[in-house]
Length: 502
Image (cartoon, rainbow, N blue to C red; front, top):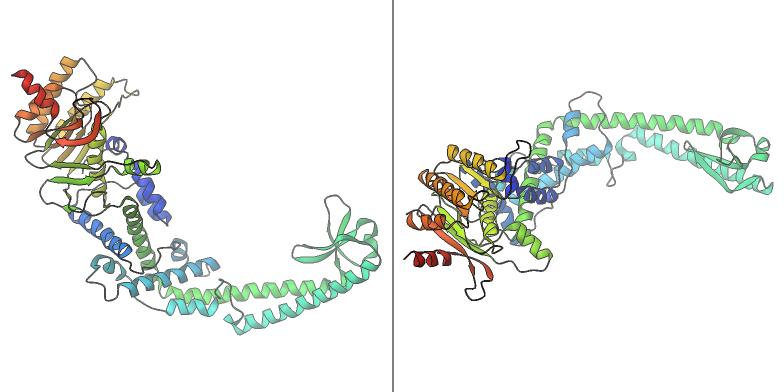
């Protein structure tokens, strides 16, 4: 498919990408949306659109569908096959949550395959099982901490840790009570250094307290001392903590080995969750825009009913302003649509509406139009909108546009949609008009589809004489000459021009 960055930028498609990225959960999908580009493969487009439409039906018909919230499993999938590699506790919980969520998807689509065949097909990459969930639940509690009961050895070690800790605290409290009588402790009395509970002793009395000095305050007013009575207990406590760490590592290695037996299933979790994230983000955008899936025609035919430019719609909504819908039609008998009308009357918005909706539908996105609308798929979508002067190549605006027109003439065919705003402008009106007419006829003979806005009367009159071209206009009040911001096939201006010619 031929679609260049200029067209992507002209039609402000990066804004749509940004909205989708904001709706996505995973970095994989956010990255995918950052480079989302329209395609021309009909089968892929229809498949993509139908998946979004199925999820939209679920969301809007009151079905209780699981929330698509998860964390990706890249790191865990990488580490599972590596012997002695350590997976963080959070990693096991990510696998646990993924298994739960995919099981919920599978359960939801069970016996709904006739209603939602494409979404059901995604879930067939995995299968329902509680083996992963049960294995993780034997080791972890609901807070994601390793249970005492994960092994007999761990339960014994933690029992000893509790006893030692009690004795340390008992001894410490006894020392504090004794030293308080002598008024040699600071106001805070105690603190922790490197995990050890220490006395905050007035520096002038530090030699009166038996124990190990572990530091002092920033001001030097206090010396932090580990009571002698707890020295051996603290050492034993550290040794037991080390035993606990080793036992937890052993337990997690055993669990890791159990999960490795399900590595292909866990890989499928990642794939399924990312795909649902991708579809769900598109669905959320569709809900936000009140979008739908129009009929996708085999023939090159467009009938946009109550169509909205998505960016204008959202901007106006934020400003609490009403947005007027458009009704635009094109087919093989009206494949060259020339739009004229007053300045600031909405010509460019109408042209851009057609363009952005076409980019969206060919990117697998539902569009803000009436459900009875018809759209089709093009092989090439190209635009020339606004002032695209190339400073780097020192080309004038007109020269740049001529170069772009030459490019269009080379690649245009019967499956090309061209969007040409202010067609032929940028130079002497007489020369520009004549050249624009020649290019217009050349594109017409290529049997391309085109939406063209222009002020040139000769282009408007030429469109009126060609069988497969049609004039459209942005209506204006004939008395006040104020724009109505409404599009209509058939043109007030052309009728006036024809009358004048007669």
